[in-house]
Amino acid sequence: MGFDEEWGRLRSDAAESRPTGMRLNSTGPGPLLPNGTEDLAATPAQKSAAANTIETELEPDTKKAGNWADETSGSAVTALEGWDTAVGLKKVQDTWEKQVKALMGRLSAEKGALRATSGLFVRNEIQIDSDFAPLRSKLDNL
Image (cartoon, one colour):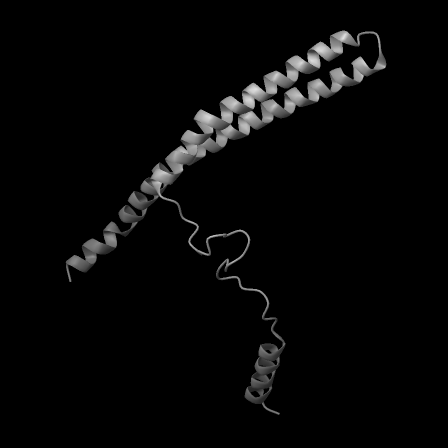
């Protein structure tokens, strides 16, 4: 058997054994895309609206909920002072405060990223344009 025959047989064997259940070139419809679109892009207005929602709703509500839980836990710790339960509640309260602080930091970072994304795309387009400028000038001279 020659190389071409063996290569052809190996290629056909590989094509027949290839799994067909996975697609790498798109997301396809599914639970991550409830509206069925495969376009994951968002407009600058949508990004701005999401950042505004984080700023005007999520951050204040998260802070308010965190403070309310702190106040309630604090009064429970005070009421149970001297009991082992108070020590446990204090530890839970400290953990809660750290988690709220981490969540507030994450919300702030996401808000900043949403607002900065549009500028990143614009700067990227300008850079690509400048990278192709020498080629365009050569093509213009032809």
